[in-house]
Each structure stands twice: as C-alpha cells, then as structure tokens.
Amino acid sequence: MSQETLPATSSGRPRVAALDVLRGFALCGILLANVKPIAYMGGTAPAAPGGGPSLLGLLVDQRFFPIFSLLFGVGFSLLLESASRQSPRPRVLLLRRLLVLAAIGLAHMFLLWRGDILTIYAVVGLVVLLPSTWLPRWAVAGLAAVLIATPLLLGSNGIPLVPGLFLLGSALTRYGVVDRMEHAVRGPAVLFVLFAAGAVPAVWLQIGAEGSAGFNLWFSLAGLLTAGVYVCGLLLLLRTPLRPVLQKVFAPLGRMALTNYLTATVLVLLATFVLGGSPDEWSSGTVVLIAAAVLVPQWLVSTLWLRRFRQGPLEWLWRWATWARRPALHRTP
Image 1 (cartoon, rainbow, N blue to C red):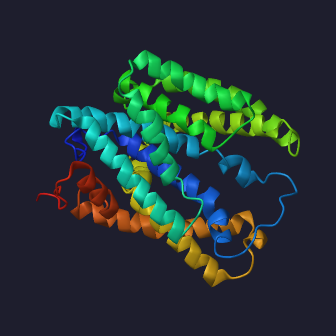
Image 2 (image 1 turned 45 degrees about the vertical axis):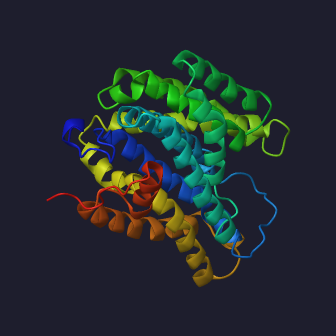
C-alpha cells in the first residue's frame, strides 16, 4: 500500500505509514523494557542487580525510548504544520495538547505506575519543544546536537537525552526528511551501516564497563546507536515485500500508541497479581511471554477498533481537548 492510498490523519494530512510502523515497533520494545519495572510497582522491591546484562537487556534496555522520543518530536512538528493551516493561533493548540498530556501522565503516575514517561514528555515539550517553534530549523538542529552530545559526555543516559531527541525529530520534520522517508533507500542504507558499525563496539564496551564509572557513557551510546540500527533497518524492510506484513503487525499498535501504552500498565499489573512471586524470579522468556500476552490482545483490539473508528479512544479524547471541539470518531462508509 503506498502512502497516497493510506487514510488521512485526523488533521487531514496523509498518513506516513512508516511513522505508524516505527511507533508500533517502539511500543513493543518499550513494553519489554518496562514489564519488570511495572511489576515492581505492584509491591515487590527489586533485588540488587548483578550477573551482567542479559541478551534481552542488550537488545531492549535504552534501545527503544530514543525511537519513541524522536517520534514525539516528529509528531509535534507535524501537528504544528497542520495547526498552522487551520488555526490563527497554532501554538495555543500545542500548549493545550501538552498540558492535557501532563494531566494524563500525572494520573497514570499516581494511580498506576511511578515510572510514567508522559509527564516528562509533556514538561520537556513545554520547556523545549514549544519555544523551539520560534527558532529557525538550523538552530533547532544545532541545539539538538548539543543536547544529545552533552549528556553523553557527562555520562548520563535516559531522561537527559529526551530534549535533544525531541529537537532532532522536529528538525528532521522541518527539513523534509520525514516526508521523504517512505521512498528513501540510499540514506537509510548508509545510516544503517554507520549505526551498526558504531553499535557493535559500543555494546561490547557496555558489557565490559559493567559496574565501572564509564558504564553510563557506553550504555547510553550503545542505546542510541542500536536505536538507529532499528529505525534504519525497519525503513529498509518497508521497501521490501515485507512491507504489508510490517504494516499489519505494527501500524495498528502505533496508531493507538497512547491507549496501548496506558492499558499495558494495567495488564502487566494484572499479570503480576496472577503470577505472584517476585519479578526477580522471572526469566527473560517469562518477560517476553508477559509482553506477548499484553501485545496480542492489544493488536487485536486496535485492528478491530480502527476498522470502525478514525482514532483510538484516548487519542480521540486527546485530540478533542487539543482542538477544543469534538472531532469525528466513526469512519465514513
């Protein structure tokens, strides 16, 4: 299915299928990384880490949140473009959108899981993304490079990288990279090779630095480079006969990412209650099975829901609050 035949977004912009696939793929990885942290919030204290990183950890930990953060910046700038065509005050819409996201995140944090990322995304969006809309794109790109490089040099990982990744996603959108990504091959192929060439030694150094002062640097760098491998690899696979399969598997999850992210917490906590015991006793296989037990029904519900409706339920409510008018939910026959 080409980009031209895809349904439009709720703002009327043609959907970029690759973004839905990438978002769904990232959602799966984030859930794998979050299964144990969510389970700990059920009342079981985590044991002290030890024994070195597992294979699952090397493939997942800090590898998917950079993708999701990048896509948040992309989505923010795409919405700004759409809002600028439909509203005389587009930044007011973006402000409302971020404030509503903060409210959703705070509810998620205090009611379900203290590890919620949505509140952080909302705050960083208010402090970094929204002001950046007044900057020229070259300044946004330069600031993104600085805000990504600085935490790495300081040996930080995780949250400190979010502002730079947001701005990188925004810059890619403003430079037209996102609009070209559906048909690009050479760029993703070159970047895939470069990211892979950097990721392999970075992961090796991460393993060797376990427990040392330099661990955070290699952990964070390996995560960013591996995320780059995943993104470019998926973009290349979308240019092959596997495209329909990838769209069918990941796009429904990605189009309902907010709904699925929040309901995953409930489902993991339910699985923790059913399984009992300590999450420290769960093997990597158990974690994968729990994630699958969450993702499979989410995929089924998302697929069936999107056949009748334009957006997921929480996505629809978020859009309603953003635009301050009730959007259409049902698909037109």
